[in-house]
Image (cartoon, rainbow, N blue to C red; front, top):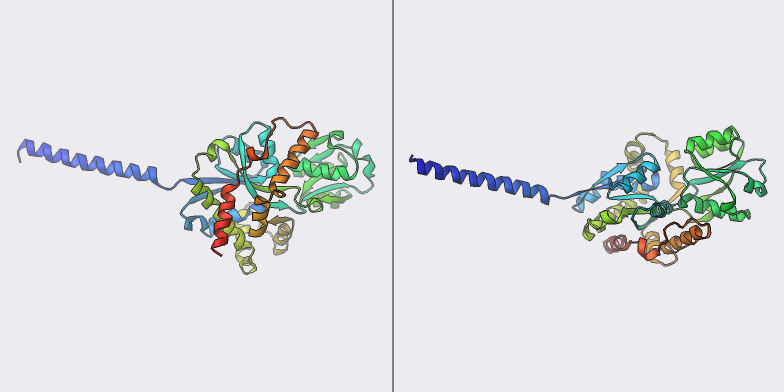
Amino acid sequence: MPISQVHHKFRQQSVWFLLLISLFCTGIELSARTYRFGMIPWIAYSPLHVAEVKGFWKNLGINVEVVPYYTNPELYNAIASGQVDISMDMIGSMVGMHQSGVPVKILGESDWSHGGDKIIIKQNLDSARLKAKPIGVYLNKPSVTFFLQKFLNDNKVKISEVKVIELTMQELADRFIDETLSVILNCDPDALRAERKGEGRLAATSADYSGCIPEGFVARSDILEKIPADDQVKIFRGWVKAVKWIHNPSNWDEYRSILNTVTFKNDGPFTDNDLREMLRSVRIHPYSTQFRRNSNPEGLKKYLQDLHDFLAENKQLVHDYQVTEILHNENLLEALKIESDRE
């Protein structure tokens, strides 16, 4: 073969090779993005694992990886540093992040604590003496202190009149048992341990002030802007499908398995009764409640305004906000509408 023909054939092969490489690289760039969804392993957030295990997101054509963080500070750092795209946590804590200067958007309400947060006090403590006692909490953020304020108000005490101390849940129980603290706001199982071993009594729970600790979705504003609205809707549709699934009693055995092998894989397995008790301590909103809480002005919007007023009254409003500035739940509402139409 003449040299010129060899060179021509070589150039053709080179062109095809480069074209294949180009198509391969383009395919990688156009492949579906995987969204990282941060959460604390807790039963209220377990529909995330249901959506993942049952393939609800995959069936909607979207990739979502549920990423567990085992302490609140770890999750908050992941949100602030952009390690996750969307997260779940107490909405009051998200407002607390906003007060710390993290540009967050609240994407909607999903559930609320209903007895899971407990105030334990010593059996012989007179409520009139609360003002003179330091109060231990597992998280010194508006999500928790807003609940604490409601309890203190009933006892004619302002939160500004007490010293709030943040400790881990285990430390709170230990210091209650050794009588370093007479009042704590904690969660089970450490709240129950404090009550049983520290001669404590249950003074109040989040169920006494219904909806005082709502939970939901959050994202950094700049990261949210990079997530197409259609993808956001699909992410929330996966959540809505999972919530509907867990509320079906016929799915209990499979749900219990997901809880023990995925949600609580580092803590379980828990008994059937343990898991049912955890579920009783929260209210994972079914469709109708979730739609009402996110669309009605007396729902999530009122909570955010009440929280704003609480912070302002106690001189804790570092960064002022309008509810409309930090709330962006349109895509969750769209997901709820779509899933309602498909029922």
